[in-house]
Length: 437
Image (tube, rainbow, N blue to C red; front, side):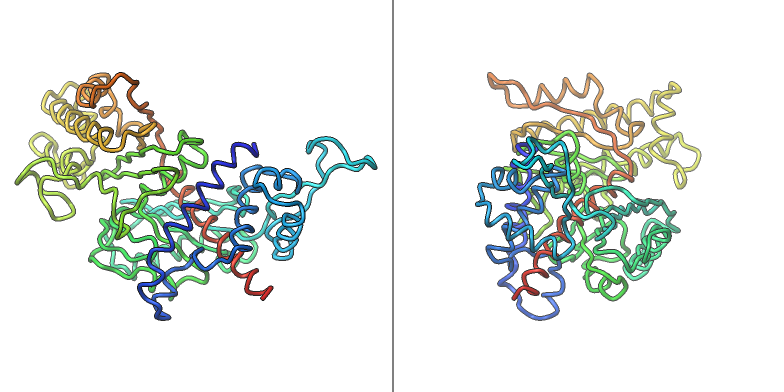
């Protein structure tokens, strides 16, 4: 287990250092500083080492100081010093374990270290079209509470959205000692173009307006640090930590919901782009003067594949397109409606072309297709997979594996919480460094 985590902790540390350092020199004002919560760029060498040790213990579940030193190529003295600091901050705790290997010379069981249980809870939030899903995780990743709450409308004013998030988290935390005030962090995932470093939302289908400094609104409403991320990126992170992509360094996750999302992991790092708004697979253009997309532009890929696209094209045979869903189109095709089947077939062909282009661009180890099972079945039929193969550049090597991993909103929320735990870890380590100074 420790050997497996070597790759994961290296991925996490490198990702954090690279992705959070870019904007540090652009704006040193106090206001912009507060928007970079969870930054690891200011950690000194000891802080980086502490974070590595913390991540190592998290990946192993339990690890002795000797095992940590071996896994991270650190001296025993360094590990002893660092773990002492982490224990003083109640981030880790000792536990006697009979499974840590041979006993010491005096016959006593070797002492293991694990993350402290019952402290530093983190909330993961997924903003979907019709509901808010929330999960509360312990610092070691154990789910301690969860809830799902309906949304009155799918697009909300930013302030109303933040108030809804706050109320949903508070309700989910009702049975946790200390309630929402006991949380160490809240991580939020929503669709759209999100700059995770600054928590600035350029556009989201969940918001009634563009260019929202969501971080400032969250700071005013919530009692703890908050983090914001594109929801497809959260699925990629969850797949990387405990899903189909465990142990991989180059993979893609395509999410199918109301729209179409993409999470890109290259060389073990989540790729966001210069402005934090990359990987917008659904908004790649496939047709000049094509169908109108929810983003306001024409000819986007998701304007032919997303749930709203299927509903739009089915207006001729659905009784009420205002309340109809993609499932109604799929059910109509199942019942023998040839027009509905033609809509699904076209969506499959367009999707195959888009996915083949992704494979040609990135040459990943794996492509993971994620979405509700009954909403994505038409996108991974034998015919669609064959069309993908026909459009991928032909070389004398196997094509990347395409896996289907259906996840609901609950798992998206878990991905948000996983990101929150990483950010909270960096915050806590930085606080320890300041206290020591």
